[in-house]
Image (cartoon, rainbow, N blue to C red; front, side, top):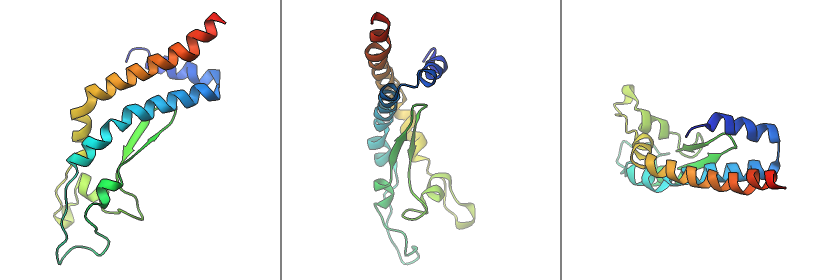
Length: 137
């Protein structure tokens, strides 16, 4: 998006809490588009005799979450306490013969146009609501 860095800088200099909240919501909404695709792309594991006791099929899908700030949004899978094997599945673990399954990257590649369209639409609404109404008033 053209002028994104300048827009982010202007939002920070305004220090308007409502504007920051609206930008964060726009970032989160655009990243939420990825979650169903990431769940679809994630491996459907199965438990066998060699599986770790911590491994529970389906926990990786449930751990896919979006966090957002006024600067951007991040989609994550796994956590150190609940799904510690998420990084090994996504990036691979050579010593354990686990091949990389970059399901988050594939989800972003497949949905990038939809994410961009959602982001653009939501940010335009924020600009209309907060910035243009302040100019008129």
